[in-house]
Amino acid sequence: MTETRSETGDEAVVSDTADADIVAQPSRRLEIVAAAVALVFMAVYLVLVLQIDLRRETGAGQIDARSWPTMLGVLGVVIAAWRLVYAFVRPPADRDDLERLQKGGMRRLISTIALTVVYLALWQVRSIVAFGYNIELFVFITPFFLFALLYVYGARSWKTFVLFPVITTAFIYVLFGMLLRIPL
Image (spheres, rainbow, N blue to C red):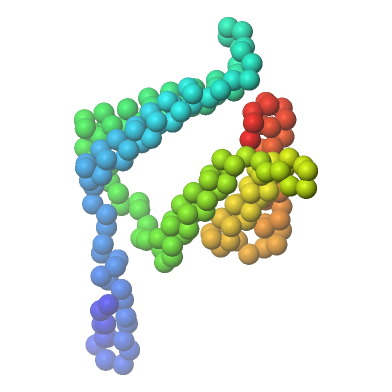
């Protein structure tokens, strides 16, 4: 921080010029690494999508549970590969539009990753048998996951905590579980 005084010396103006002068510099290496990571991620996604088990075979040209994820995977691989070529060929993009790191950002990132890992681990269980009933876990763990994410990112309204997780979970369950018959 720097402090400047007017000619009369009565008032002090404190400015944070050290932080204001810091601007992210263009980085070819950063763009190449980001594009390469995206390409690897999308390639792994595409390989996993192609291993989705189908309950029943569809005819030629029909859409099945593998169709949309495959199209998204192919599109992701194409875009990531294009970004990688673009990062090598073109000069690096300006990064002057980036905002400074916000307080608590790293805590939110780590919390989000931890919550997602726990959610995916619980989702792999799929269902439990309790009191003689087979209970699907998706409809219980998804609202709690969304609730926790809303809390981490600062939502404080009870309507947000109740309506968003319930409506989102119901939409996903009806669309994928009931209409498309994809096991959740």
